[in-house]
Image 1: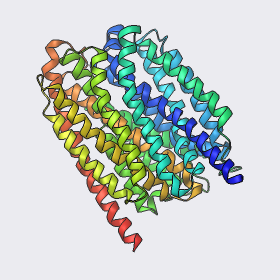
Image 2 (image 1 turned 30 degrees about the vertical axis):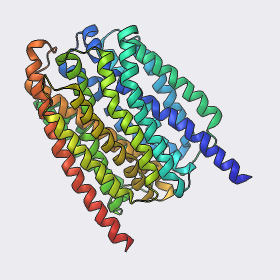
Image 3 (image 1 turned 45 degrees about the vertical axis):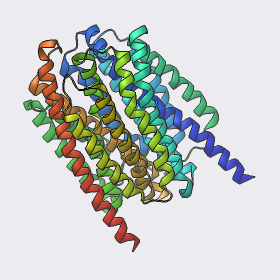
Image 4 (image 1 turned 180 degrees about the horizontal axis):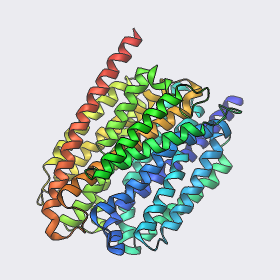
Length: 464
């Protein structure tokens, strides 16, 4: 009876976690289709427009690890539900934003709520399922994320076309409130792994200053302030690392990296993968709407191809991870992504749409095969007491990578267009920016393949 009750709790918990996992990528991918309309509403220039995503990514990345530690002390469910509420309220307010600056600020606040969700989501899921069922559960969770990425462009394009960009935020807020109610009713358990321990405020401060400065500085290159801020960030992260190694209750256990090569290499692979891919949807959305002249609805129909395939192959990868080595599957996925990225380098103003769709299918296959097996390797390489830290690290690598990816996009646009409104006169310069971006992404992904290959060798040696 207890076994049946435990299984039922795991299944209902998975449903709640999947709804919350759907929420953030849905809004993010939907907003990409609304960017030209948002730009027109607030007269936002090209580089400023990238901060719609970057501001959100910075706050989510910076706050994720500290809130994961808070969740270990106070309870994962409390932090998880608070995050859903903050995200939902800020999304609602985004729909009423009177200016571009306030909209970007509200996106930053939304990122704090996302950090609380991301820092606990995978940790709760890992706690709910035993190791033999975890790969399948992670596959389902990742498939939902990719389903959200698939639905987002289509629904976002429809909402923007017929109801205006504000409606995307209202719909996201509604989904968030539903997730909050379901979490309160259906998510049974609190999962307190460090009750009574102290929170390291000093370490959290240095971590926040260091990581935010690194991301902001990178995003502001090639300006002088970018180099200065990047240097401050690197110094801040060095101080953080030195300080944390001396603490009894650190905000983040750096021993996860120093004493666990599989965890380190898997996290590095995730960082590189997202740094090489997150900006794809942003650039293709602008390319399809500005250069190719499609409306948001039709552009969304093309972009959903990748996410639909990702969702399908995430389920397949989650199932196959029981029979094949997850690290080798993740490396295979990264190789396929490189092929797709190289194809994107050669896009021009007359590239047939079927070729674009074929490239997106290849990328979807690669993402689907990489993501859930890589997460499975990360979570399987740590002890139960470190689930929250590992979960938050996975999320931080993803979001830091995404922020770096948008930084690369911002630099390419800044070099070729500057901070101007994208008009037909600047379409050739935009195309050059897009090619540079995809070349850099391809090189990064090759480095990711190398990190994955080293990890495979390490796991092979440990198995012997």
